[in-house]
Amino acid sequence: MSADAAPALRRLFVGSYTDGADRGGIRTIAFDESGDEAHVVRADGCGANPTYLAQRGSLLFAAHELDSCGRMAAYAIEPDGSLTCRGACTAPYDAGTCFVLPDPNGRNLFGANYLSGSVACCALLDDGRLAAGVPSRRHEGRGLRDDRQEGPHVHSLSFVPGTRLLVAVDLGLDALVIYQVDACGMLAPTAAETVRVPAGSGPRMVAYHPRLPMAALVNELACDVLVFRIDEGGLHWRIVEQLSLPQAPSGDALAAHIAFSPDGRQLYASVRGSDQLVVFPVDGQGRVAGRCDVASGGKGPRHFSPSPDGRFLAVANLASDDVRLFERDADGMLRAVACVDVPQPACVIWNA
Image 1 (cartoon, rainbow, N blue to C red):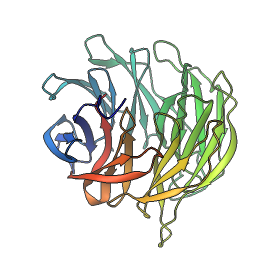
Image 2 (image 1 turned 90 degrees about the vertical axis):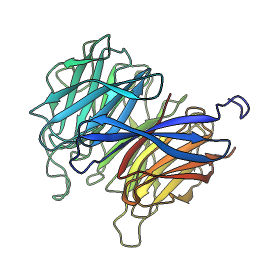
Image 3 (image 1 turned 120 degrees about the horizontal axis):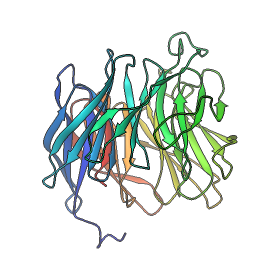
């Protein structure tokens, strides 16, 4: 999309921690790209800690990160930009829902439960409401580190593009557990493949190249990125490259998020502690050459997302209570253009 064709006013949704408050954790930001201005226009949401958001059409989904149960909620995005809660799906035997994933078939909503180490599924009805789905799948085992890997901790979920293979990234087990999923959201009894990463890595998020059979995994604890090649059926993940990320002077750097640019020419990652956004150029064959580090403009860049047209990138700096907006140039480099104060932002996405 050219600059002339792009809309001047864009909308973003921000999920946040709420310190126990049960309303207002989802904020809408209006960004006027013509004047590089952004501000919060409203606060919505019912339920505490909507820390991860995902959109599908006119529906916005939230993961509510609670110690007491697993919880996912659905919201209708109204024409005026307000959000109307369509209901929630609560699982008393799960806990710490930190990620939601709408099924591409439109019939299910999956959730990653960090504290209970499980994968949940709710049925998505035609009117946008959620209903009880299939039973959760709980992982078992532990990893190398006693402080963070004393048990399973499912951190994120994704479908391998073009398949019914669901990838559960388990920080506690140092593994990507890949399940075949049926149309009703039922996971196969056994994993189709379990991809092991080096002990103590603490895998967190995976991103897929938009055209090539290539995936990139960010490891929170090892603070690095692993690049994989995948076969055409979505299996047989093979590590082909390991990429370093900037460390913090205190030694407590924690990698957070990862994403390819929409055109696949750059791979981005964020690192807390060093508070950097990392840009890796990617060539036409999927080879990574070089690295550029850019300050996130705040502290604790937990999550970021490129705009659908690739012109901008938004970053949620959790520890400094702000969302920063960057413009991308032709080489994928970043220039800060706007900042919005948001209490404890954990996730930021562009209205699609």
